[in-house]
Length: 72
Image (cartoon, rainbow, N blue to C red):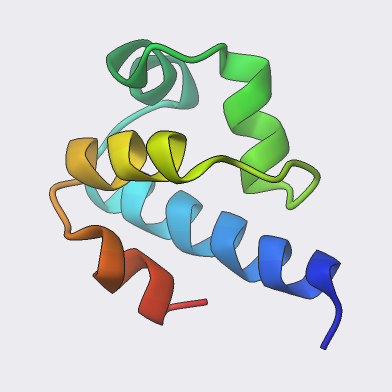
């Protein structure tokens, strides 16, 4: 398993949860204090987000960080 596939699965999980919470990329990014283009890169699997960023995203999506990680 390569890193790209891990980040790709993480991105898909974030997209699914973001849409489930009726959030746009812009709104999620603003709530997490990150740039929308950075969130887009995370969702496309092109970025390696820090633990802190993943925690912010999970918190805003109303899930525990470990739940997000289990989907990967």
